[in-house]
Image (cartoon, rainbow, N blue to C red; front, top):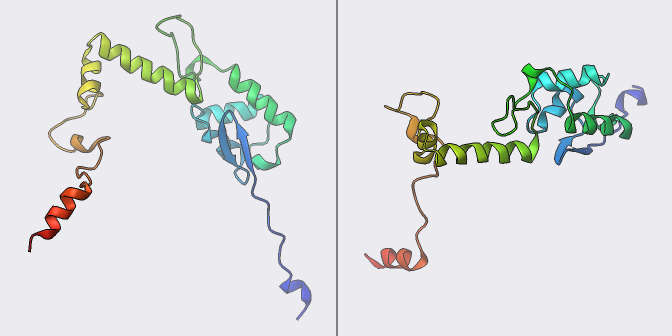
Length: 165
């Protein structure tokens, strides 16, 4: 038996790359890794790789600083076709743009708040915690986004219950 058979492969480094306030594991490929960013879907990730001429199969940890900077700049001002944008014909400005990370969360929250304020049907459904997209409510809707039913007992109540023989 030769020594070559028993030599171990060097362990790969596991790095974390931070892009747009999102930690992306360095062992992920570029195409899949970019989808970790909130607001970046597979189609946007694919379009970004093609427009920036990035190798989609290259590991995120192997990207250079220049490539990461280009990704960052692209995400701040994406030059995408309209059908890929997630905020078209904004209600306040009327313009089309693409939101990512915290801006996406805040805009969604403000939209729901506006719907509740004007007391639209969708706003009322949001306020009462019911489905808003036409699902039936005869069964299964009650489990949508609710906390577990039981509450933890306070120490005094738990002690009183334990004294009863």
